[in-house]
Image 1 (cartoon, rainbow, N blue to C red):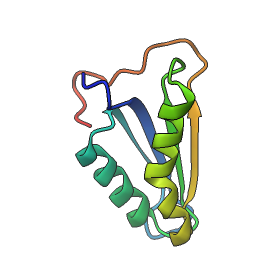
Image 2 (image 1 turned 60 degrees about the horizontal axis):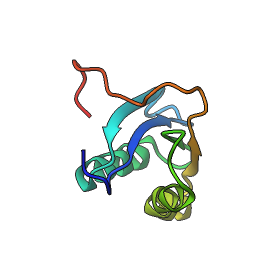
Image 3 (image 1 turned 90 degrees about the vertical axis):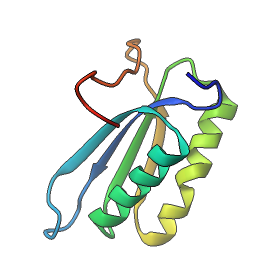
Length: 99
């Protein structure tokens, strides 16, 4: 794992009728993964919510980097929430699910 890439879980929740439901992704926050998550959020439309969960051990600088990476979506009327996972479980993608 690249030390610069945070392990994350992302959840996009739609607020509209055109794209109802939610989409979840998990894995390392590579540039490609970030772009894909942003595309998911934009596709969900204005009023959608993007929730990003980083590992509990992520330091403040790492949390800030993740927040900064998705902050621009707020200008597109996407609610963005970034927080640490305090459940104590490691953040891992299921081996059968691609990020």
